[in-house]
Length: 259
Image (cartoon, rainbow, N blue to C red; front, side, top):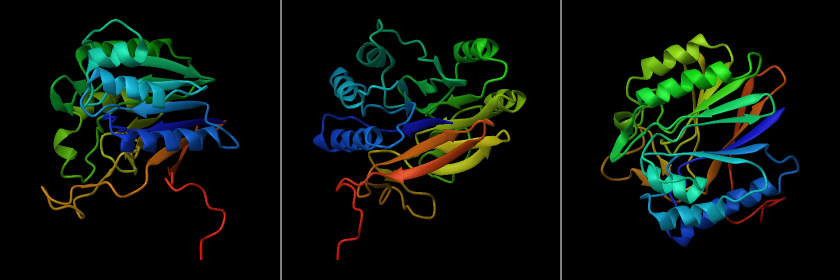
């Protein structure tokens, strides 16, 4: 099997709080008896795209297994490239194709510079078609992006979700190798389907955003009390996708309840 850990919406903001929460998650993953094969970070790495925030993220997200990242609406493409990828500054979409054993992970940049909502540009669709053509004919594929292409019953996220999701849906439905779609943005663990495939939205390490039955905008929108959470995706030998969600307690691991 392949085990992929998904972190999302880390929102590094030069505060000790958000950094410590990611460090706790990375420590949890490092201490697992069976460690992940890869760590995916699905956007909003930083809170405002500043170079200092990317420097903070680079240190906290360092691991001795592959870590693949994509931008979210709070990120800055140029600073993302220079601060996290060691590449020259550019405002072009940050897309990447990554192999983990037989698994191909296609990371799509759905950010729109200066806008909170999402879109896959024509350049990204051209890139995606080429990446799918180059992927192994018999290997599973995961697609990851920041903005969910589905309605999630979140009054905050649904109005700034992915534009024109039907275009992506046609690609996902039309390729049997694609076993699922991973997203961030919603600050909540959500499991649904998109184009007939599993769609998993990873929780945020920074905070929790409620559904329409929980919040009363502009008040009681974001909850900063819960511990950081992650998604753990298992891809088995039959290329089936199974996801577990975990909360990483900031107080550490207890083998028995305190009395």
